[in-house]
Length: 241
Image (cartoon, helix red, strand yellow):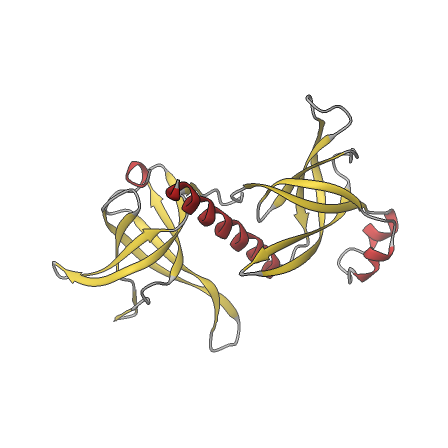
């Protein structure tokens, strides 16, 4: 798939997965501009080693980065590891290997991961909606949460099913857990229901699409990182079959 979309000469960006501190103490993800030198296989490719001012940036081997390819068919993204660094034909080269599948990057959308995750949720009451932007501690003291199942998740929202039908445009309080690096974190988020439809093969159950609102940037990045990790695990399982 890589060679179908990415060509030598395409512009590329390398972005760190972890945030780094700058002099002003603002935490950001470092971004490096580079270029595709060659596509060696469907899993490996060469990038020109990036530079900052006049110095080469020696990205460490066995470190994973997010890669964006700017191709004639659009922008594509993936995760990739630095396998090696070397010089050839007066070029300083990074040898990279995919650790996730290549996907089309839409600037206003997020990659969606199919999954099965337990979630509890309920409709926000009118007075709660007026308090949005304040602390969310009061939310958990309201009526009990109802069980639902998330069937796909992204950095922008969720698709979930349950036996309750929320009207499009309504706001819900939802709570679910994600596991990363052996640790479990619970997320309590507000989402706006965009679409609701009854399942044809299961009357009385409804599918909803919802978009997060007022989500913290750090939490969104954690969710995206979880999705990439699961995608990488799925890719490894496919290779092992």
